Image 1 (cartoon, one colour):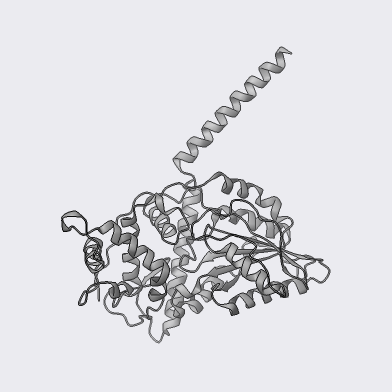
Image 2 (image 1 turned 30 degrees about the horizontal axis):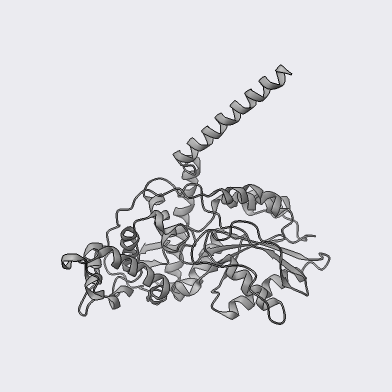
Length: 411
């Protein structure tokens, strides 16, 4: 077992915020006024990192305008509502995280966000699609005076929004249904709000697909750097913005944390190889195993890194999800779940393993909440390049207004 797993050196995060994302973020408040249910998709491997803070303010305002208050608002909530207003957080790709962490994570999220509904799904499991379809139909039936239920699907790029709507439409509409939305493994395919899709005939349920919206800036320091690499690994941000060996180094770190005893990548290495925290050593061994050589017999680490990341996305993710729960403290043994949760194993007297995992996850959520608040108070949500663009736009607007005033005065 690895006794020490050093954190890799990561570059500063890039800024990737195309114009269509900004356009949708600005039109969201008006769109929510005719929305009854928001399906917010997140990636189960990044349940905190894939929270879209750009959309949070609009979603909170939408619920307050509909009379849905939280305990933090300090206002009494009505017991009956005339119109639906539901926010359902769907954690997709549940098959890519260890099963033992799902229930503790669910309890931890409910304790920290009691006003939100959580649902775990994998689009490869028809029973998950059926259950989500039943949930939407149930919401529609709670409001018989409403002629139809309008659903808006939002989230980060490449979390599976279009795939979900195609699956829901196929499940809810009798008979053969054509694929209504294009899908891609690369982020940014959906660039505009879709036309309304019918998901159910009785009751009537319609849905809109929306562009994936990235954050204008991923943050400063080590946390911002890590967030960018995480999103690049799950293809939520353009992979070309990062050096592939950087992605491989962070992936190696995460697989070691998920299972320090027998990480999933060991099956890829030559016989007799052991776990390692040295990314150069790992890539050398992997290149040797795959026969990836350059001129002069040098091992091609770049090709090996590309292969390693591709392996994890296609099959290695399922392998890493089979990591067992470690609940017996052995020194400073670390344990992880997905890419957002990491802790030192230390059971309290008489504490069940599941309770220990929940306690550790709640601590991770608390740290994330504090860091997010600090970033917002320090204006870390805007990069220097974004500030320069804004200042330039304001300067151009002032110049145009001055020219307009001068022209009007000469008439």
